[in-house]
Image 1 (cartoon, one colour):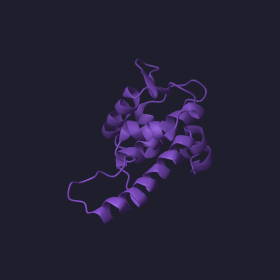
Image 2 (spheres, one colour):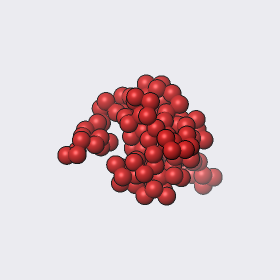
Image 3 (tube, one colour):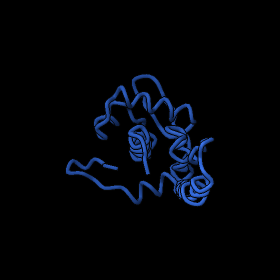
Image 4 (cartoon, helix red, strand yellow):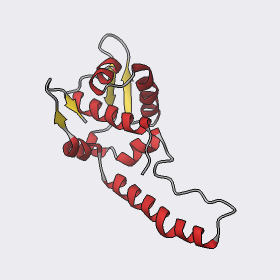
Length: 144
């Protein structure tokens, strides 16, 4: 499976927001960038996409930052991936020059694999991902 850096960083960013805004606090771009080792400029682009997908909200001002719109248990990983890179869970594109065998392989193998990935990410919530993938580093910061 191929996935993009944007998808990888975006999932880490939304998980970071979920973890660090659990008590209602806002999480800043600088905090996420520092904890997850992501360029702040690149992170801003990712956060814009997550905001446009109505997964996170932004608050401006001195106590501003990001928080989740919905609880982590209501956010499906499919929604996060589709907000960041809709091609990850898309079926393989058909070309006009595919032979019958290649077309059948696409339908029997690649489309079914993509379907299995979609089904898995449809079932998995952000809360489950955090529970399964969480660990703390030597500073006590969560690393996803």
